[in-house]
Amino acid sequence: MSPRPRNLLSAVLIVLAALLVPCGTLAAWVAYDLADTGRYTAAMAPLAADPDVREAVADALEDGIVREAGAGALRGAMGPFVRDAARSFTRTEAFRAGWDTANRTVHGAVLRAVRTEAAGDRPVTVDLAVVTARVRDELARERMPFAHRIPVRHAEVTVLPTAETDRLRRGLRVLDVAARWLPCAAVVFAVAGIVTATCRRRAVTATGLGTALGGALLVLAVAAGRRLTLAGLSGPSHRPAAAAVYDALTATLRTASWLLAVLGLAVALASWLTGRLPRRRGVPAAGGPVPPPGAGPGPAPSTPGTSSTPLPP
Image (cartoon, rainbow, N blue to C red; front, side, top):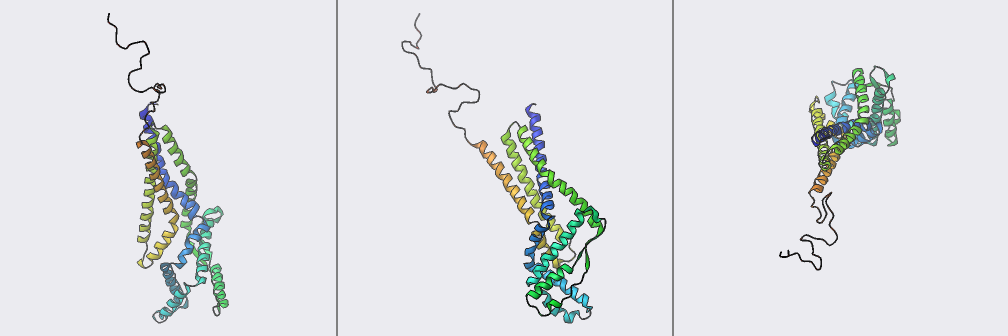
């Protein structure tokens, strides 16, 4: 194959590899990080100490207590007391234990529904009795009066409607396949593009720059997703808490994106510097004759008894 078609094919393969890098990273993050209950719970656990998250939970508890008590007309009178009690609860170990249990329970229920075909087309529900029992035990351990008398009632709460469950099941199935094959395809295309190129050093440089560009685009995509997510909320009061949750869930994805950008730039810079280094002197060109030892530039030495001056006729 002539050099021009080889370089064109190499460029196409390297561009494909650069496009697959961010897509494969995103799919792997969803399939192996976000869709893992243990990793999800570990990422959400520190948010129990976040002030914005605690404030949002306290507001939700206050609304729920007032609504359950049927004291809507007395909200102005009893609101400060209920709010103080809710805020005090969010600073206890019982809240942290309930937070972890709730996240683990909800995530596990959603994951079982989207992973199991036998779940059928029905909404995803969780029983809050598990969370209530954990909170009651923690309050009793902290010797709160009458904590052992807190009733544990079975209450099914819908966390994902039927339409969302089916859509999430199909999307996660596609992401599972993409997470398995897109990174492998990116590596294969990159290696093939480097091998096909007539100047492999330039191909390595282009591959590094393409990887860095893919990582940078993924960083911008995460930032844009954060802005769109917060803009889609109905009220601005809970946006700080939503921002904290979004940042906690995308921490691994942001780290992977920056690693791709830095690694790609490092490879490209190393390849470029390799081509700029001066060659050593005295090294013959490829295919040229090798001079004998001690031979240098200049006329060949004459043998004894002979003269380099032509004799007169």
